[in-house]
Length: 288
Image 1: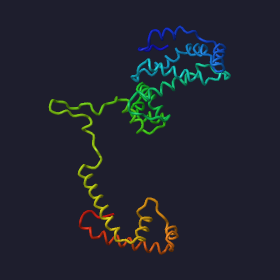
Image 2 (image 1 turned 60 degrees about the vertical axis):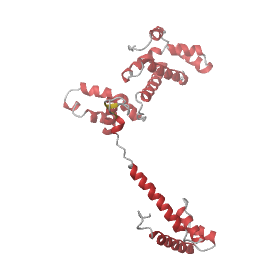
Image 3 (image 1 turned 180 degrees about the vertical axis):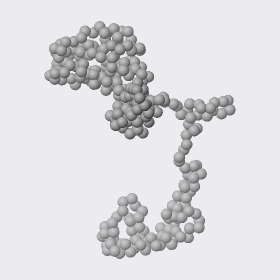
Image 4 (image 1 turned 30 degrees about the vertical axis):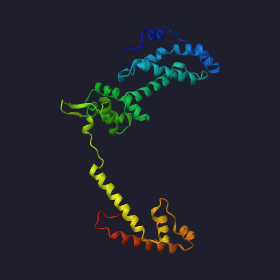
């Protein structure tokens, strides 16, 4: 079993002292847990495989997470494997449990390695956990082909775009940094990372200008609508101003006129609006 600093002596002693299970004994315990929910059988089954949990957790010790937490997550995977194991199948429990233990630890690492959520697709997970290993393998290779473009070699090996590999490589190469961390500090002025972020939004004066223009257009439109008669105003609201547009045919049936007559009234009302709004063309921005 791999050495893993951070694991209590009591846990290591309990894991190493637990007896190995023969195939038949393992099957009997698994059946007792599945069929009768025998807690004693579950404890014996999982205790015998805690050394497997610690060994798998040790492979993830370089991600900066507490060893005890990795083992705990691995134990959750072990319990999940016990709940899903089918003793009738001709496979050892350790073989089946390995996948669940590793999956549980990997999920924990992805969720806690950084406060920035990484990719969760199978390809992104493979890249996250294999990038360092593939880099080390390429560095140990001989010849120029092994070191000319390591990122492209990794992208080819994992069948991923080079841009994805570059992004993951940069993320693994640097930890999280607070936007409130001070970059330049003196008694008179302290500059944080936040101060170097560029705001792509409009400037304050542009926001105020747009708000004033919108209010002005709204007043102009309200005044212009006053030149329409009741029927023209209804048709224009139903056809142009409401979110849901009513068809000419439906509006004609409601008003008791033909759809062609509705179209004519609509065009006439739009002409009146344009003439009413044209008097404001020199007062500010054009009305859409």
